Every structure is written in C-alpha cells, then in structure tokens.
Image 1 (tube, rainbow, N blue to C red):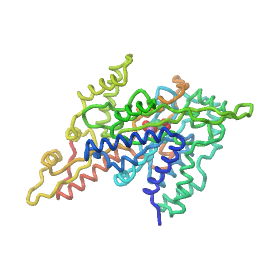
Image 2: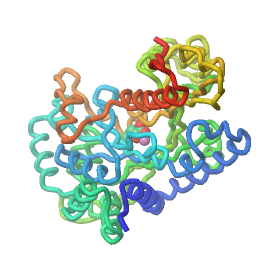
Image 3: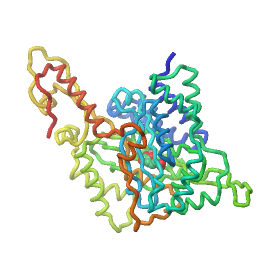
Length: 467
Ligand code: OOG
Ligand code: NI
C-alpha cells in the first residue's frame, strides 16, 4: 500500500511529538494542559469552539521550529518537507524584526490547500543563518563558520533519496515510509556529541542563535507548539503548575471581538544537560539553555488591509507605552482599548470592510426565489453564510519576541555596518521552488468558495467582494 504525503505528514508530526516529549518532558505537561483547556472550551462553547477548526484538527495541531546554517541545508529541508506536502510559505526577516542579534531569515513549511490543511496542518518555522551579514559576522568568522557548516551533514543521503521519490511518486510503500519517518525524526534529535566550548562561546558572543545553529554538527527541534483554544486560561494554569512562562502573550490582545491572527506564549528555555569538549581535549558535563515550550491560539486570517490595521495598532501601542514599565495585564488593557476603537466587533463587519478572509457557503435552495445581487445582501438575507479562514502563518514581531525572550544574551549587532541583501527572492532561489505568498493562498481558498456559491445558486455573474 502507498503511504501518501498527508499520511506521512501526520505520522511525522506524531513521531516528532513523541520524540520531543522524551527530550523535553515539560513539553508533555504543556500538551496535557492545552488538551484540558481545549476540552473545557468545547464543553462550554459547543460548536462555536470549532469555528476555527474541528477539535480533531486542533488536538493534533502543532508547529515546530528548526534552524539551519546554509542554503544547501535549507534546500534539503525543502525536499524532506516536500515529501510530506509541506511547502515554503512567507518570508520573515528576523535580522530586522529583532532588536537583539538574530542573524536569520525564515519561512514556514506547511500544506497550502484547504483540504490538506483540514486533514493535518502541521507546519515548521524554518530559519537559516545569513553568515555573509557583516552586522553580525566578520569576514574571518564568516569563513570559519562557512567551513564548519560546509563540512557537516545534517541529513543522510538515503533520507533525501526517499524524500525525492515520495515527492515524485506521490508517496512511498510501507517499508520505505517507515524508513523515511525513522530517518526524518532522527535527524531532528538533540545530538549527544560533545560541543566545542570555545567555538560555541565565540559564536554566542555574536548571537546565541548563531551558536545554537553553527556551534554543533547537527540540527534539532527548537520547540514544538500545541494549539490551545483559550491561551489566557492556559497561561494561568501553567503558572499554577510551577512552570515559569515568559512575561507576556505575544500578538493581539485579549478582547471581546473576533480572534484575529495568532497569540503565542512560551515557557523559558530549560537547562538541558550537554557534553562539552574543552580546549585541552577533556570532556565535561554542563548545560545549555536553548530549547523551550511554546503554545498558541489561532484566530482569523486577515487581508493586507487587516494586517495594516494590526501593524498600526501595534505601533500605536508601542507609542502609548513608550518609556513606561507596565505589567502584562496593564499592557493588554491598553491594547484592548485601542482595538475596541478600531477593529470591528463582528465577523459581518470584518467582511464588509474586507479586513479578514472567509469562505462562503450557499444555504438551502429556495425554489422559485431569485437570489439578490451582491455579497452583502446575499449574506444579510441568509442566502449565503460565511465561515472564517484560520490564520496558518506566523508574525515576525512575535517570532522575534519568541527568539529574544529565550536568548541567554543579546549578542552583538553592529548596526553601523550595512546588512547583506537577502530578500524573499533570494530565499526562493535557495529553496529551488516557489515561495508562496500567504495572502494569495487565503485569497484563492476564498475565491474557490465564491465560485462554488455562484454555481450552486446559479448566478450569472461573479460575486464581487466588498471593495
Ligand atoms: C523560531 C521562532 C519563531 C514562532 O512561533 O513565531 C516561532 C525559533 O525560535 O527558531 O517559532
Ligand atoms: Ni514557534
């Protein structure tokens, strides 16, 4: 029997989760609490709790984060995820988004069409070092780091062969699928090899992220994030369990309007035992703090106009709080107030102002009656209903916040030097495949739903979206 991309992706997400749980037991605690909260929300809200995804989808839903060093490694990652129906979506420049030293650019590998997302939305935020960026790396360090990275091998050739075959043939037979999954999961385990103390420390002075990526000869899962339906409840409960969370929930505030985009929080990186090799050749036990646990609540995907509004409000919040020391609660209160003044309270108004993405669905047929023109009237008169499209991507500011909150030091960023040009096109070139635009993906899911409505209602002309 052939195991296709969807089944490979779901199985890989489960295996990675089992593996990560043995490596980072606090992750299991986070998953347990997330599932308790989800059950409670479902019991309290019923069908409304599933408006942004069925409980089965949400329960299985994870995102991972991994970090690689070179374009060649990034391209190999793209092949491995390609076998599982996960394609690069979006470009994130953390070099710009983070105030401390985070010398990476990133994308997210994820399914792109509605059916695949519904089956299993597993996504992996994947970052790549930009070692040619002089704000971070001197010429000399670039050369030595390039040599170190060029000499290592993250993924065995057999894994890459199986990945290519799976992608070309639409899957693998059972034995090959088993081997693919075993090799793929193993590639993301934490290495037991001793870490060179002086090399790691040299990179850490530049950037803790650079050390995590280039200080060792393998890669690993940095975190694996479950989805929760009430992140505020989860945050409080983790505190009760004695697990220290970072100060705040990143992203939109808690407020009484629709949930938009993405809210995330994490617990602080844990001290994990690692072996270190000293310059005199001796090997000693010590600790590294790089891996953490994160949890997220997902809301509705926003249009470019919705995103501009979100970014404006985030900037206004910064201005309003500039120079003040406030608690996370006070910050949320100020943010919620800003939102109440500017963000629609209802889904209907989000649609009317074209601020967020929805799919549209024809209601029961009404024999003899002629449907009215225009989406607004079709919705108002109950001919058509709307369902929100869940946000499947990430937020650069939150990502920078997540990176930063877990760094042991700020590192060093020489802002007087010019950065290396490394934009979305350069990243697409590295990947050797198209880099999808998230807005285009949401818009095409919406457009497909409108085309179905048009056909089902027998409308002659296209249904226009609000301008
Ligand atoms: C990735 C940080 C970004 C998120 O959820 O925004 C991220 C990393 O730490 O490697 O995972
Ligand atoms: Ni994350």
